Length: 493
Image (cartoon, rainbow, N blue to C red; front, side, top):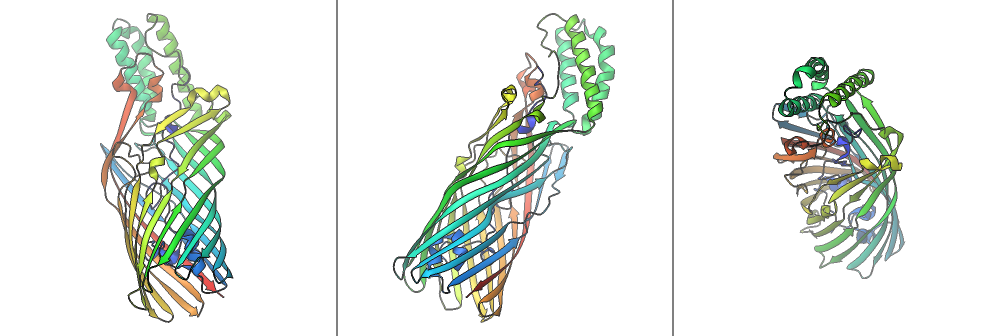
């Protein structure tokens, strides 16, 4: 019975939230961020390694270097029955660096590092949804050696080896605000309904304990924190590009799914007041023992409650980083104008569920299976660039990003919704082959209602609990927006 208060916090371990949907970050170039993140049909030099490795073969210089940093300032709000909560996020800073080298006129190679997945979201420790998430942070890095071959003057192909690694940390309440009182009320009602003659004998002992449990009506009595590093996992990035004529280019690229694995993550338990909580649990267990002696055998009450010693072990989990298929077209109506549009198909359907396993074997009873039921989604992008002068390029773009999360699986760990992004940017060339790149994006989520159902773990361990007391539904109206400035530099020689 000691698993009574365990693991509500892990039932939906997400490793997620970003300015893009799910936990994918589309901020891999300050230049292309100003064009709505298009790039699959554009010849971007070294930066093509991310968008379409086939474009690397069209480098016009021997060496092409590019690096930059974005800031993601994301804000989310959820409003439900009797509460309204906003995030207090720390900005995330996805980065990138690309180095391309022309080997022959028709062959180029390069190396890149970027952060295609990552996130951060922070709610209050004691808010109404703390049993689902308090805070979370994810960083995933990709190192990619790339080779690109221009087969003809108009056709090229390319491929890169993705080597992904990263880390995760998250916290959520094991016993959220009001859950102690919820359990006490259920037990009182169960005794009053089944054994009303016993209630007068137990009530004098129960009432002061119940009053003491009410201290945690507005606070999370106990929480858990998880931290883990994901080892290196391999994937691939391939693409092709074809010039239909001097003005029109089509491109296609595919980045494979990579399954990140945390093999030995660390677990820590946190308390609002550990000494008081342990004393209170001792009183509750004494009460349960007293009730067990007075009530008939099989009375439906647990023999005791407690927090399992999760901090003495480790956890392991797997997370799919989804595949991406990009198809696009670029049009150059004049020498100064570039227009591009593309569709990005994101394979979120791979994220069906999350399994969390605990070791040593003495903790395996607490293993979790958490359904996610993500669906595949699409992102529609448009971008334009205008060479205003020999030293200044200006850009603009827009995109629509579909949510992969179903209405009945909407969770504040990933306040997912369809999003509209508006972007602008520019590049200034103080020297002929050296540019400083700026962009800014505003991402507006389309507000939505949703819910998530999980189980009261503390109620599961009590025998004969009525079905309506076993599960809880967290519902709310979600809204979100993000600001995304970026700066980068590039140099060719």
